[in-house]
Image (cartoon, rainbow, N blue to C red):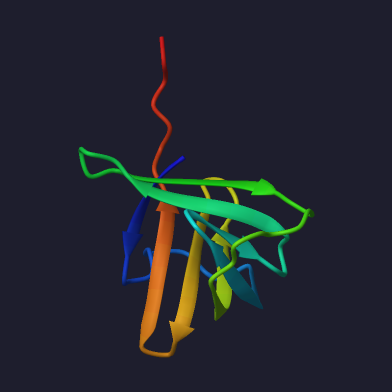
Length: 102
């Protein structure tokens, strides 16, 4: 999915739920230990930010870094969430509207 990443909360949304987790970084992906998903963020040549995730319960190899994060979910569809690294470093992710493919 394509997402927009900002430093400000999208207007008109209230938190649904929050949780603390560890992200374990493994090359081009990261693993959320609480949600049990692997996610990947990629920037395309034309500047779009693509985000993907999938459920995962296997083992991880070549992990090189862990980070404590507070994730706050604002909306499930379209997906909107924040990742708080510290009180002064928060990133908001907002799924862009899907365009119809004909």
